[in-house]
Image: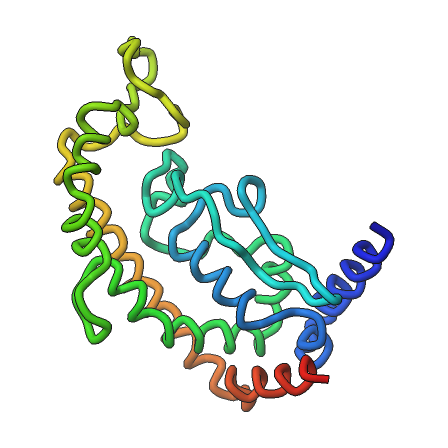
Length: 230
């Protein structure tokens, strides 16, 4: 425990410095940035105060694994997180990291690199057939039984009487689902598409404002690789 606390103090001090040449020694930027974007893209309500995981190994902070997305991708009563617009998850370490314009530039460059993967969740693109349709093709019968027979998807409105055969799960934190399975699939497809469009637009605009920063994501990752190798 003493070693862990010592490592954590070094990591947090480096992050608080807002100096990339300091925190590059202690923060695995590849995993930390990707971890942030996965959670931010989905607007995961459980980020920070719910199912939030990271590792510290040999004094290096790494993000993930990602987990628990039942209150994400618009499926939440938290109105700010249900919206496809805005940034919501810059908390704890990420709050301090994004105060450094160099980190912000790195993170924004990375989003533009990975945005095709987010788009491919629901749309065919250069990466191939979209993941949602592929999953539906393979699991549709099971998904539909889960929705119609088991009651997993059923939530009741406030002050109404729940059917005793329904599993309520995280109600009242989830919204009441749309009436049909296909309507819920359409909602998910549209939410993911609109979220990616919004983030690409906003990231591109803010990245233009950081054009005076000479260091790029690839250059800093190369520096980090050299540090970690030794």
